[in-house]
Amino acid sequence: MKAVAGVLLVLCYLAISQAWKCTDGPRLHNALQIDAGQGKVVAINKYYHVYFLTGKYWHYMGSSGFKHCSVGPAGLWAVSTKDKVFKWSAGYFRQYGDQSIRQVDAGGNGQVVGVDSSDYTYCLTSTMASAYSGVGSVSWQSLSRKMRYYSCSPYGCWGVDSSYQVYFTQGMNETTCATSGWILLPGLKMTMIEVGTDGTVFGVGTDGKIYQRIGIQSNWRLGTDWSVTGICMSARHVSYDLGNLWVVTTSGSILKCT
Ligand SMILES: *[C@@H]1O[C@H](CO)[C@@H](O)[C@H](O)[C@H]1NC(C)=O
Image: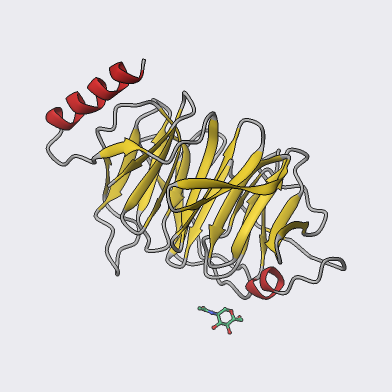
């Protein structure tokens, strides 16, 4: 099975000129999700354990019951299988407020965004997100637009709605969570999308293929088009940081592509 997968990857390299070179990432069995930001890489497996990458090995972070995690300027965050939000603080995941959240993103300019099971969206200001006191009031702000997946960078946020349509907003104010308007990108439909800290964008199409947003420039963060990466393994989840594209395949293995 392994050998077959290797051959497929090689064939893809030959077929596509602008190829990503993928190797089996550090081995984590039955991976569900991965997130990379600011040099750090975290992942979750099907037993709902969170792992942190150190060297070639995944280090189990000691608590289970998590289905999504995110690392970025706002720190390391995870949501539990019961849709509660936790922030990594002083060696533990500590619950952060009582807001129900299904997917969380810490990649913005210090703010944290999240999506609940009905696709309503929420934001914690950078002040709220950084000042963790264990208990007390944490007020998530409701955001206007519903999304099934939400990802922010310091250069704007990307989202996918319940019809798998892709949206972009140039700015989200980290101190107020206010957004400028969202722009709908017609065309390709995506199941998830991730923007790296440097503004690079990758997504998984509804066809399972991995796409990169091209034409992104410092004065044009929206980009111009989607380019299929030619990575042949069907993808469940992707995340990009510092030149590395991390892929979780639908069969639960991790690829590291450069
Ligand atoms: C964010 O909002 C505050 C309050 O309205 C404003 O003072 C600040 O300039 C805004 N920041 C950016 C980057 O627009």
